[in-house]
Length: 206
Image (cartoon, rainbow, N blue to C red):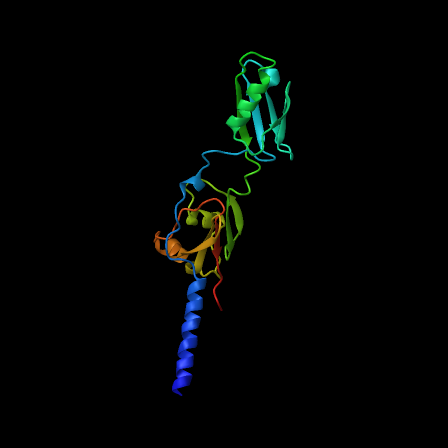
């Protein structure tokens, strides 16, 4: 009998340990300012660029970045833009235009961030009224994202909500007490979100 009880106790301990490993961390996610705003944007395929050459409107164009990462500029032809910053592309165009005009002044502006738009989103899934993938805005929180999804359904288990955040090597999960946020105004787990975050609201067990 004692052996049986010992085995049950050991099994119970293993179950508790397994449950503990599947739950999100109760620590707050690390706030990464670099993920909140891009300090150096690298141009990607399908981005829309505006190339302005001062005093030369015929050389100023609005062009998309082609699948080969290049754009076409009057007089000088193809210019590599993919993977470079706007300043780097501007410097390349300026250097090549020197063969045609004196002291060219060139500005390159990304007018539409088409290539990175998919990455700069926050996703809300599970027991919400409208699971969504929404554009990230600086200062956005878990509550902002959930409200953009129409709030939770009557079948939700809000206090078991998880925030998933991917880093270069791992994906970490953080426990969010969404019920406390929505019903009691307790904002301790109303964490700031970052681009790429996924918020999952599970259903209740019936």
